[in-house]
Length: 354
Image 1 (cartoon, rainbow, N blue to C red):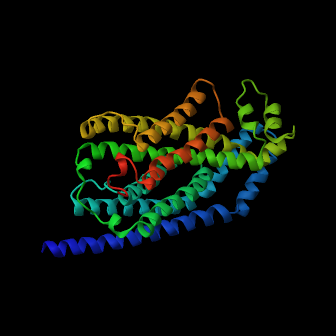
Image 2: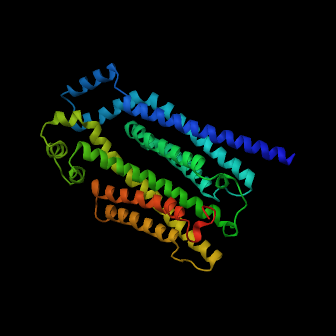
Image 3: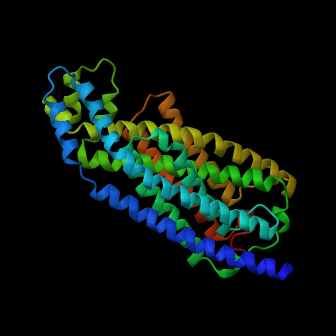
């Protein structure tokens, strides 16, 4: 009877793996198609023209009315994409719960489980923050997060050795109640910081393509007149250019703001994760800090994002400069999470490659 239950769970888990991969794959395709090939409808174009010719509206009013019209026509389509992301998220959490039932411990004991949990965190945070995004930001970010979650899933499923994918008893170093606290909080922080950094990278790419690198930083200067505002951004006093490129301007400002907010959320999680890890290390190894490679890179990650927040809070930096720091943080986070474990050295190799 017990053997049959185990076999049924194994079969169900394999089905969930396949279903999760396929759902993330199609979610990625849907977001890419929608982002790349969406074109405004005839009715939307007509409304835009009427808006431009309205002499009673200020340029700022027109900028935000453009976004309102865009959101109105995109709302019905984005709901389908959100539903696809939500299904992927649900399948991931069911997969993790099945592994929890099979192993009898929280499913974060090896690299396979941590990658699946990281993919779940990314999709979950996207769904939570989707209400804060404009439709334009949401579909662009979705077209980035969906393939990221897909790659995490594909790497865990197809690249890791079979023995690393199987549930196994916890090694002595992981047999602690701190496992759920420390590892969960660290991976949530990684997911949050990755999403915030991706927004900064997207900001830099769009800013390099469509505008001078110093524009967004100068836009935050106090008491900038409307004429100077449009000239700074478009290099011209032509307010029609501002109307034509309103979507891009609002998009860049929104990306910068959201990146700051999301990284601001992830940094406390990272701090709590490092502190809880130090307490656990003292219980397991008799020392709060051993300068293990994982500990060192976690501290480096903390310092990079501390610098990011410090420059924004005390120096008032916005735009390109903090975005560059966050982009560096993106690389540091990934090396801290995955690169150190690929080396396979240090105390944190338990449950991963050694």
